Image (cartoon, rainbow, N blue to C red; front, side, top):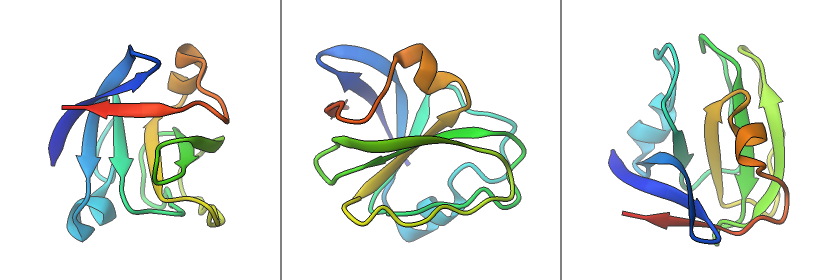
Length: 111
């Protein structure tokens, strides 16, 4: 899994794990007690939290990393697909509020 930084307008929001292989995306945050930072699942249009140990923030984004919508997702749930989505960012619940992340934000990844 690739390590990087998640930015908005040049400001570092979090350390970022990038999951691009099928195996990395399927594993995602399963089996973890939490995450420092966030994980990017690419490509992805929907996610689930079945078997997860903690509540997560989920941001559905375009391929160009423009946030379409965000939700807070408890364990053992599934989302509906984001039709214009190309990737998903997941973090521990409360992270997006601290980062003031919202629909329309244009994000960036730096290695």
